[in-house]
Image 1: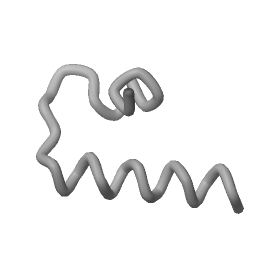
Image 2: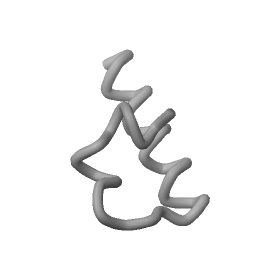
Image 3: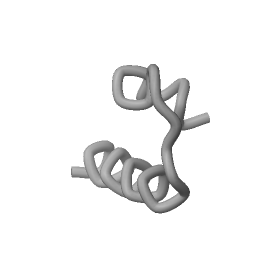
Length: 33
């Protein structure tokens, strides 16, 4: 899950659906950059 992939971002707070999607997009962009 994204919470496991990006623990430093999600730790200690809940993310909205939009925030989660944005993080996912940014993570994929970082991987493919």
